[in-house]
Image 1 (cartoon, rainbow, N blue to C red):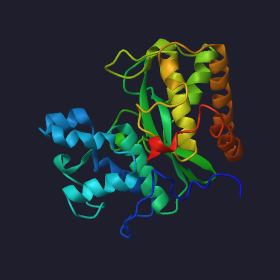
Image 2: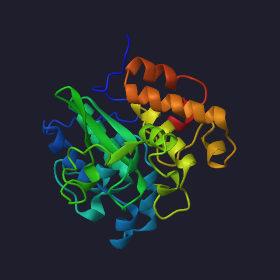
Image 3: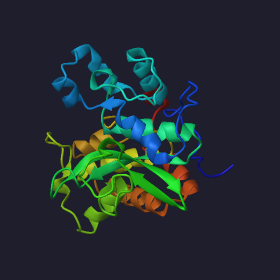
Image 4: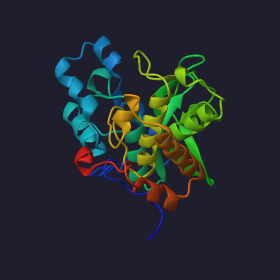
Length: 267
């Protein structure tokens, strides 16, 4: 068997519970996740206790859903008040959306990269979701649905979000300044941040959607400035393969040295 079945759950997007009340429209499904996750800074503004912030470390969708039901047993179609949402990052919005779409048998995948719409002139570390419709991948940012940051968050325009690989190619071609790409509110900016998201995006295309701070292979060395031209050429390969979107090539590259997520980290 070849290819990657994006309509089926992966190790981190399996939802064990029966969710028969889910809508069928992809945008409606993603809209549910918008009311199920809350960012840490918003959680603090609502006075949530520090014991809740471990939710930010949840990787598998089934554990995210279990945490939601522990807070409120209502169906996922019922919007939670902010204090009863799971604390998570943009990755949790994207992965939960992806998991719900796959639960409905809709081809979907999470993408790791940078959004250009939060701060003018900057690409900020971010995750979104894609789903397959009418022969193309539609990019949707669940976290900002209903907002006015972009014209249509349910179908992001070209350039509004760049995957890690797309950002790397733009950097190598001189179309972006890597110093303007990074993690908001931190000192983590530059080529190493783009490399890290290129590797995470490759894993996500292989249905292994890790946390934004997970590291494996030579990622830590890259962040420390200890990798050189050979590793950059590997990033070139990642960018090219991900852009071509050939599932067999994506799978083969992911299974090469340095790029496969260790099973212990997934578990």
